[in-house]
Image (cartoon, rainbow, N blue to C red; front, side, top):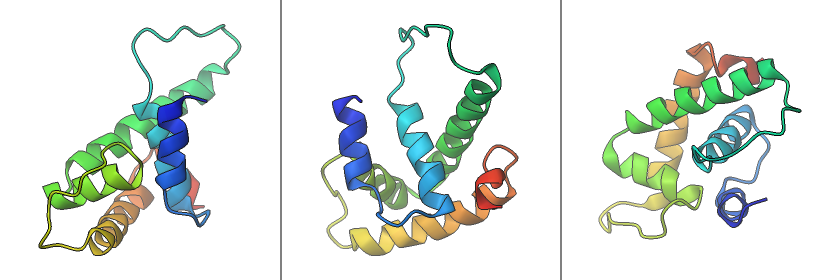
Length: 115
């Protein structure tokens, strides 16, 4: 595994929930580069679902208010600083999780994780 992914998983919420599984998929998706080469062994349907999930969650995260966006990125090791000293990082992360969970349950690319 890449160092970035290891840090992202290490910083992510601990409980194994549908939300965490979706966010772990998104964190892996975020570490991809355009130059990655597949050896052709992946199941095309799995790759399609992985990419759809990553893109959907990225869109959902980008729609969050900036302080909640920052909290999600910090939780998954994609940033280290917390630039909102007047706000609690933990409270903003919980609020972001609540908003994202509702959206994930309705989205075609992520709702299967919640069944």
